[in-house]
Image 1 (cartoon, helix red, strand yellow):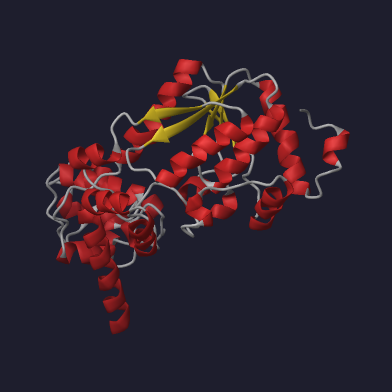
Image 2: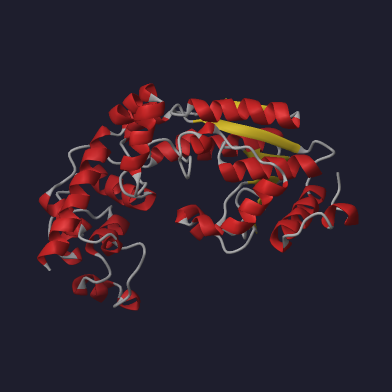
Length: 336
């Protein structure tokens, strides 16, 4: 199939039409294309679009099995293969999430916060309420994590880095309200790390890229979806010079109404995670970063009790610590 005039007149949504035109151009420009399939709603649309355009079968579809996945997602992969006549490679994580969390630690609050806490724990940090100048001699090899811990609002730190004086940064601990105070009073009693993401998906994706000599990676990231992934980009295309590979996000500019139009126009059928479970998103199952993690866990407990048991075991420390932190924040706000 090609985006010819007959096809274009059937699409009454400018953004959807534009995404088809861009997708066709990207497919023509590249020889080996890797499409990451998640089984989620946006991913379903990407698969539909690519299969409509990829006459030469340049696209390799890959699903990364993190070791903690919905049964409904696995069913959806089978459905996609049957509907579109494609093969979706199932690739097991380099280290499944349960193994990674046992070895390196559990994620807490966000990927960046987890990385900073992990660095401090690695240096046996004591969660002291001291200035940067007092902490640096004690932990000379944890400079970047100490900057995060002390925050750019710290006057003493500003003396060491005058160019940053007075600036509020998303890389500062102060971005998470009362987190520093909470951790001083309640030091974490479990290992914190976000390495599970790298070993379950990121590093594995790089491995597959090299294996198929990919020159383009296609993902379903949408700006309107929000979150760290969407916030990291400003356009639907980018080039990673280090990896020597292009990335294309065909749905990047889709609003929720654009997405709904596509779903209705092309009869997109999503997994039971959406149609039966009632989930709005199907990212990493039970991941502690979600603001509505309690709601998600109640859904998992009802529909997939074995998966719920796994989440409760793997992320136990992070769940409890997150609950304590949120309770602490509410108490501090009530005192003001």
